[in-house]
Amino acid sequence: MNLQLTRPLAFIDLETTGVNIGIDRIVEIAIVKIMPDGTKTVKRRLLNPQMPIPASSSDVHGITDDMVKDAPSFKDVANEVKQFLENCDLGGYNSNRFDIPMLVEEFLRIGLEFSIDGRKMVDVQRVFHMMEQRTLSAAYKFYCNKTLEDAHSAEADASATWEVLDAQVERYASIGNTVDSIVKFTGEDDIVDFARRLIKVNGVEVFNFGKHKGRAVADVLKSEPQYYDWMMKGDFAMNTKQKLTEILNRTLLKKA
Image (cartoon, rainbow, N blue to C red; front, side, top):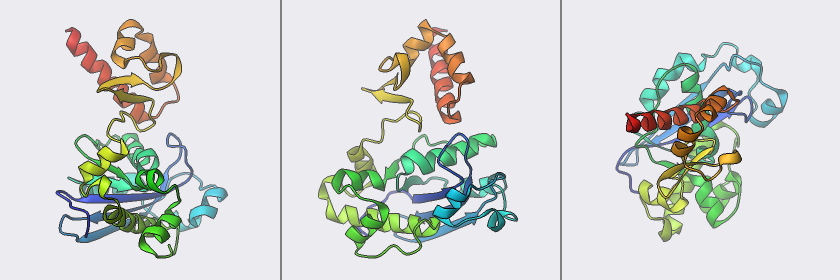
């Protein structure tokens, strides 16, 4: 194993009813957990999304309503998933923009706390796109010289992603061989919310959209408190609202 780990690294791949994090649901979850000694453990579950799976989504991942009608819901397996991910850094392919935000949103919907504080998040697609500009199947062929069988099967995709990252560590000395060094290289350690409505600039949380883009969130909440109310009532992801509330609470504590 080329990658040096100090804690477990869990690669997550989700198949879903669609790509809208605020509306869609998980129909399959696969987690490939790599321990510091290289041991691999796999957890995979089909899930009943409790909503119809569009035909366009089934065409991509092959999962139909009939296949999940007797499967557990996310709520049924949430504690099991949370325990499996305990003390793990998180990885995946496009995972910082989709898989991890979707997973966090599912936890928020059922009111179960799943914190990413202190976790490193390694997005293998980010490394690949910075270096080669390809897709997962091409990445697997390029780095591992293998053909990705069963593409869009969550377990196959998650396992392939792990192999690609290990091969990237061997190929690119510049990214280092630790989770910390890879996250620093990809520049993914300054996100505030997964939808990237809020980001950090020089360590300060700022808005990344709308009329206040580039302004410090705390300053806006002080001068225009109704903006907080507007966002909380708006069609923003629950994770965005959660982070906005955390910033507001910190701001109020400083004023007290």
